[in-house]
Length: 210
Image 1 (cartoon, rainbow, N blue to C red):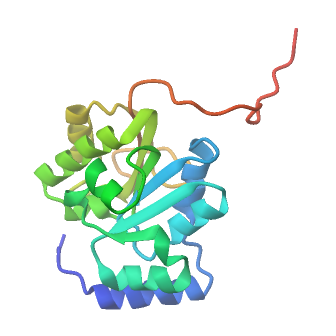
Image 2: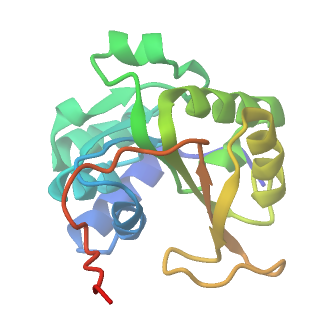
């Protein structure tokens, strides 16, 4: 896979899609189903910020980081500029996030849109290690990417093992399609060991008494 990208052209394309009403929120809906209400969520490689906006609309405290100003300019135009920061994956850490006035810990972290494909093996491993530090106990790391390239499921599983982030689900799309060795896309859900506080209330569960 070529690592050369015309980010200005990409930003313009994504802006056109967003303004045309193209559904760019499917990853946000997927994560919203998994995360507790009012979760702190970090979108790594947020692009034009559609997922962050969608998660905000659903009541989460979501933020996005991306190394590319071209796409963040579009995010600031379409949504609330204060939700986004210019920050490469390799520089993410709790101290850096705090210096950017962002939370130091999260209930969920998202990395979608082929971000892993642009990370070298060591950088992907380091990203998983840092994600593990940023997540609360029981926190979730959701990764969506092309399967048959660098950063696909095999590379993710190796990085996750180093970071003690067990895989709990893997799908072939954002609609829970079964994943097979022939799947061109993968959505992987990793979880930090422990139990996450989910707040109070029935949360959709109404158990019948026998």
